[in-house]
Image (tube, rainbow, N blue to C red):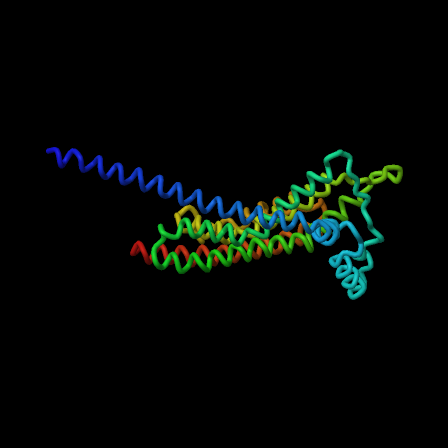
Length: 279
């Protein structure tokens, strides 16, 4: 009787130790991820001229490479309206600590973007022991795809969506008597929010993969609701772009392509789930 009564206690203690071991392991992964972000943020902080002059503030000038491409395209198709006029936004700082705090904020954002592949790798290392052998093999590919999609979204937003947004909102005028003087905080928030929003939206196939894996979404459901997704994607495009049709379509087209890719991903995962369950 004593042996039977002590056995559940031993198992309970083993479970408790297992829980704390996992918690300690999670703490290690989080700590290493934060260190990676911190180191790269410090590196970005020390290279402020590259971060600000070359990257962040470039879309505020008509010499930005995207404006040059659009102008060449305009000459090619006889659409001179695509050429951006001599634009150089007047960006001002109105707070004593504004520039320093902005420098810190952008350094942290840059550190996270640069460390994103490593952070995902740490997440994968944490969940890897709970995966089956085949799942581990596919998860490595998913790690690479997830990183590639996020960085592709960041680059697409920076070179296409951000310039159009900055040009439209920065030069829009309700009257010739009102001059645009953009605050540094407003400009930075616009660039960062638009860039991150598109980067996250590009993770759609990965999200659909996991939703299909746990049975929340099926390929038939996604095909059936295509017409509703058109409205949803157009709404998302309208939210993260300035209110003009050209910008919205530039975002909507790749989002729609990602949705179609997500259907193929869902179809493949759904078929695999059926094979595993024997249905």
